[in-house]
Image 1 (cartoon, rainbow, N blue to C red):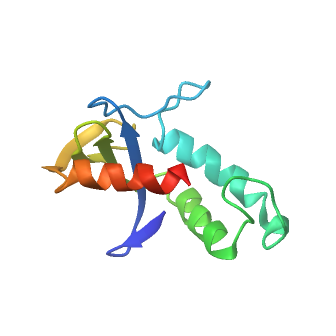
Image 2: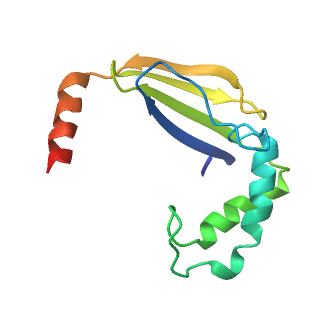
Length: 131
């Protein structure tokens, strides 16, 4: 999550073997980055203040003050924030960038392009991960 032009923005990157543009839906039926999910997550994050800077085994590492401040702003905005999702087809190198609405649905396509030298880059990445 960042601030872009004074506005809260979540940037998300997804890679799939297809041209999928889906985002996850949780067990509560909330689409990833929807206003409702954001609002609920913000409330949860406000309870993490006492854990800021402490060692953590969560995927994102220790909680930070900056992270907590961003979630406080999301809470104060009722869960509204901009959501940009970047979807890359890991077979073709095609990249599509979307802005999503407050429900997590695609509002508009921002960009659509093919990565230059994709096959060579993909092979180089494979070589690095063989080691």
